[in-house]
Image (cartoon, rainbow, N blue to C red):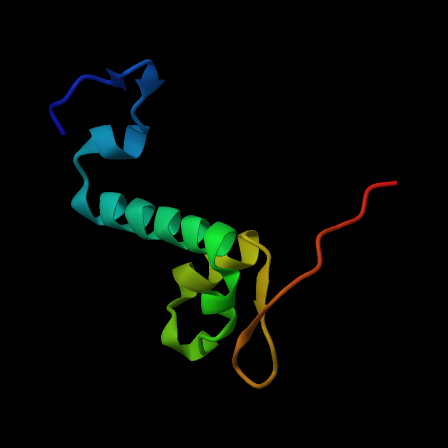
Length: 82
């Protein structure tokens, strides 16, 4: 990545500046999961957990999804603050 480290006032993530193609691909996949979880969580809930690798399942867990015994994902309820 040879572009400037900042674009329109926003800094470019370090992983994109690193030039490491594997890490960039992983970062892009993680970002796609985050957007899908935000906009279409129903799509993730329909997926079989076995369709994802370990890293995918880790990011989905961070995003609030857990595999159920039948193999699909379900969204854990958000913690309620008192």
